[in-house]
Length: 426
Image (cartoon, rainbow, N blue to C red; front, side, top):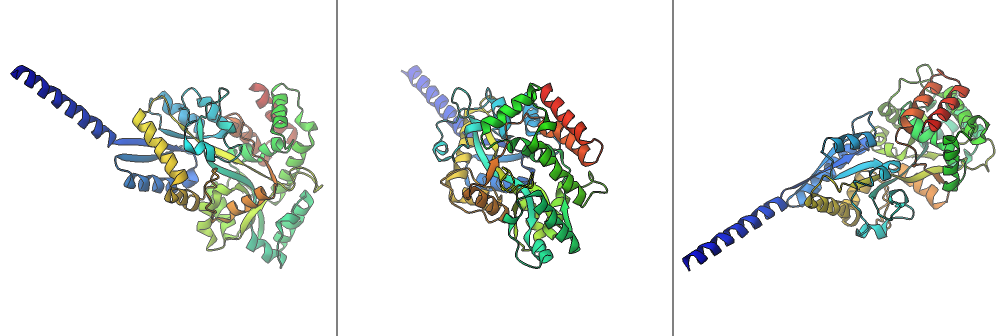
């Protein structure tokens, strides 16, 4: 009998120790979030710190993608080292590249609340939903309304800039007032993933036609020199080069300097996206009169692209299903649900991080004027496809070719030859 009692005691002890160990593990879950939106690194760190402070046993850490490295390259390197974060923020076009490592998210509540088409780029051929849509973004010519109206001596209506000639006349008037009219950001990701991507976006409102155009480039069937939209876009870029604040040294500027130039009103127009607002507002000194102009590609107001701006879901969170434990995976799911459904989570993402959410249930209106401008284009149906299916190295390779064109190291024929060679090389 004593042996039985001793055995039972030992069994109880083992069970207690096991339960204690499991509880201890459950109370010490650490997850890492890979952030590829450097402009909101500080805001995401604050969100993670707050969530960690209110969530017992869970710590959320935010790691940034190094400057100059693409999200795909960083995520691939982390997987190779066996240190994959629980959540990896990747570009829309990269989601399917991680489909063998991503945890399927079809059963998550937020799937039903995602806005229309926001999960298209995140859904595998077998129907698995591979990622969480982080943010809706858009881009075009950011304008400082106060500067323009001072130059014009009256009210500025952005809808009047619907042709290349109208843009030229506006830039002329700004220059005549003594203010620099426009600055071009020379970053390869801006020139390659955003500006030249307009050459694809303006081909058609039908995304299937855009993909057909891209396939024609791969097959060598499309000649860019013969394409009206491509040439029209580059005609506009030539105009931008003519008025560029940095035309004497066009590759010298930086992203941070651009936010200061447009924010302080030293220049009136800058080609960029709504993700710039967290930095612009630091220089704007209470001036919230900013918005977007389309990039016109012709002198016919009716041409597609002259009155539209690109809008789409640009970033997704992949939830790692390979190197993180079930406890870490659950903690990551809980964190995402907090962002979507908790009022504090919603506020911190939309207001603090200036993110336009991709979920219908979030009704908070972004306070920043660039987000408000984009929402106006969306509500009026004046949007282009934000072309997000580009290969991972497109921004670097085509961006480098655009940098050469910006600095006059190559002419238009040389630029188009390089772009065609890039696509054929795929």
